[in-house]
Length: 147
Image 1 (cartoon, rainbow, N blue to C red):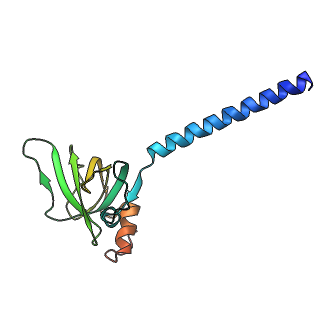
Image 2 (image 1 turned 45 degrees about the vertical axis):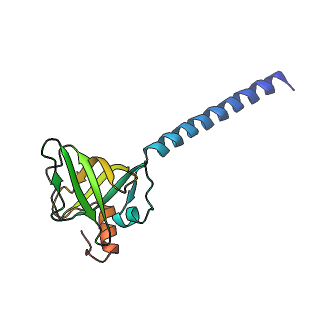
Image 3 (image 1 turned 60 degrees about the vertical axis):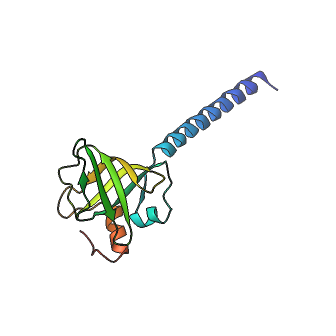
């Protein structure tokens, strides 16, 4: 084989290897950072993976909020009006967090079916509801369309 062709082939192969490595690294980073949304019904039925970061959301049940007297630990129940799931959170809840309103919690589902949240997101005005929560509630027949 001609030395010029051999050099060109080596350059093309090294470029392809570099592009392949970059694509593999990008896909690996995306796989680790993906947070899939699960409704309380999906979590209760075992569809949500244990030990993996997920987003869980729904309406906070009235009367379910309990605060620890000596720490920032908070526990509350989220429902999609079919099933419910308990969420434990350590920290200060958002100012707009209220019972009877929609939230999304980011955390890990433990072996007991409790979401150990490290972040809680509350809706930011009266009309807004996270799209996943809105869809889950509409599917359950408990909520009309939100603008």
